[in-house]
Image (cartoon, rainbow, N blue to C red; front, top):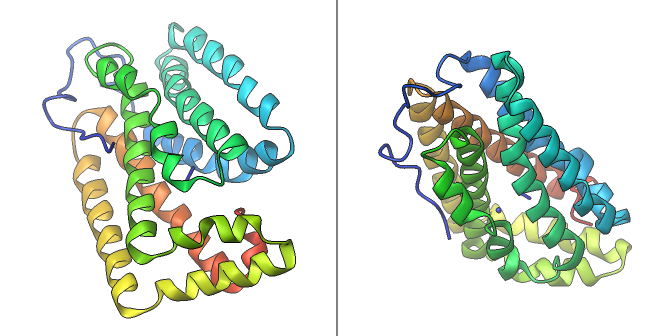
Length: 241
């Protein structure tokens, strides 16, 4: 959830003859994409809350490590490095929003999309795997924010974050209950079905970049589901308050 919506068109991600990821194993890419989407939920969120500046500075070693590994002669390590480059963009965007702008939900997408021009330009370069991960994560965040806006959850955002902890849990629980009403629930299920269908289609694409996109969006969907479940049953475990 950490999120303008790009379009991963077939023309952008047609397999490149010299791509270093074309031979990567699909399940390895899937697992890597899943881990990099889930990591901010368990590591970045508490870190940004306690020390946002140091969390943002951590982008630099992530980026440098990714660039260094991308030139490794072993494909497994070079693929990992390329993914880290894309992940560093998502990491910095998340740090900037959750560290300093979390009370302004409408700024979420613009801040997360700060590297959008670079990512779009990177789709036709050797960084296309990094670009596809960043763009897929951005698509997942855009869908999440859109559903929150349509279902009315976003209007409770500032109220929940500004409230004392004992009141915030009740407010978040009430907002989550609103999602279970017929219209919001229908919108939520429809968005989930669209993302699942995209993931299924992307997974069967011969290009590894599409499999990374599928894993990133599928994990975003899973994390959103966990957030909703936590907000309903144990709001203090949601990570938002």
